[in-house]
Image 1 (cartoon, helix red, strand yellow):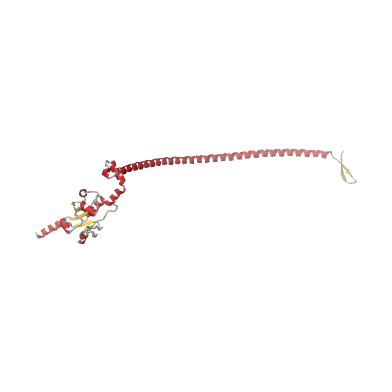
Image 2 (cartoon, helix red, strand yellow):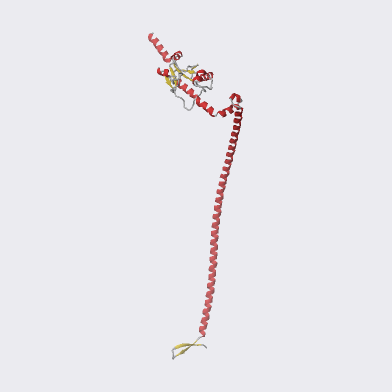
Amino acid sequence: MVEGELGTEADQVADKPVRVYADGIFDLFHFGHARALEQAKKLFPNAYLLVGCCNDELTHKFKGKTVMTDKERYEALRHCRWVDEVIPDAPWVLTKEFLDKHQIDYVAHDSLPYADASGAGNDVYEFVKSIGKFKETKRTEGISTSDIIMRIVKDYNQYVLRNLDRGYTRKELGVSYVKEKRLRVNRGLKKLREKVKKQQEKVGEKIQVVAKTARVRRNEWVENADRLVAGFLEMFEERCHKMGTAIRDRIQERLRGQHLIGFIYDREEDEDEDEDDDDDVYYYDSDTDNKDYHDD
């Protein structure tokens, strides 16, 4: 019986969920908050996650104005899948009494120090860390409530116009009459610039198409011109060759003709000389042994 009873108690202790507590402001609840709560929930195989959220009075006093009210922040936490229980009006500094009241086994939070209410810069988790009940979670880089607020402030004018278009009045948005008109005029000018820019891009695209087509046609024209010039030069060279051959033949014919005439003229002169020689009479003088020519 004793062993059975002890075994039953041990099983009950083993099956008992580990009560993990995580707290914060959780303004503009985002996935960075959800990931931190997921880590807290998964610290143990069987964990019961309690999430404390400070009310507006404490938050505005020690951290500053929030976008969401405390009621809205509580409700956002209740819709997170990792949260088992929400503790509203959570204390700024954790005490032993608070841990005992909610039977908290461990406190989960990132390791960055958070100043307590004393003004001395003490860490709000100093007590929890000192008793070994602190479990560290990791922050998600690139997302925080401050980052989201900064984005809104940076694009303030756009969000004002966005809400004006949705039916909010300038008084509800805290915008003066002059401010509203200036924003609307600036938006009109911006749209006009965008329209002009798009038109310029369309014109630029058309110019590129025309230029591309012109380059293609120019290349075709150059190729055709090259062929025409090459054909002309070939034809010109052929004709020059034929012309040169014809001129050379005519010159040779003329030269042959002149040579023939000269040959005939020379033959006639030779014949005349032969006839003159036949008319000469030779007399032989025995005394002088010389030939004398005597004309009849």
